[in-house]
Length: 281
Image 1 (cartoon, rainbow, N blue to C red):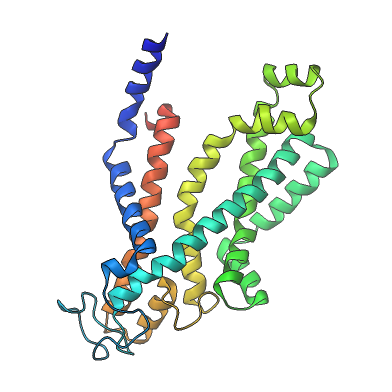
Image 2: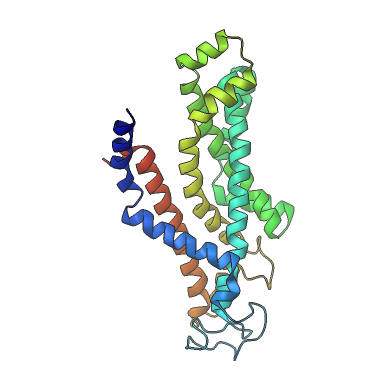
């Protein structure tokens, strides 16, 4: 039996080592390293004068300098310290809130479940960027308020996902056996239902990390996120629009957003292919 299981696992391992998964993992690891040790990648401070203003890319300044003479590469690297932690906090918060709401709506049903899902439907009826803008504008500019706005946008996605999973799992025989044995609702949810629902949540959360970074950059771009002089990718791109012909100002943060979003998407695709091999056929 153990041999059969080992061979089955080996047959599924190639999805982990697929080129897209490796590329995505390498990109995410690079930006994780940049988040933890930005000074190892750039010797310049993201806030201090590093050279002449609007200096084009050169060996001394790989991505040139901005309108205040700050090194663009240093600001891009340090920008990861703003975007990645915020994205992780937003996704974890959205998963926790959405899982709780979706589990209650799917398991209990009735008036409570209907009320939760109507709130979910109302929230999802608004375009994500417009709802995030409205919440962030009402709270005021700042990364913390932008994070709250993004949680408001994202938790209904997980609530709907978890509800669908709970509705399917609760009809299985082991759940009916637990009910017949007199187990409480909380124990049934936490021990017999939710452990079977985590795979799609993990895949969705992995892909959503990149989308949250993109939404956070969008809020900063329009002035509802990071405040100057914080090195944040969306705010840097906004600064670059003022100096259109000095393309390097927006090029660095733009490529950072592009690579990190693709990296998380590639990892999510690899996880989906691993946990559900039929999806790759």
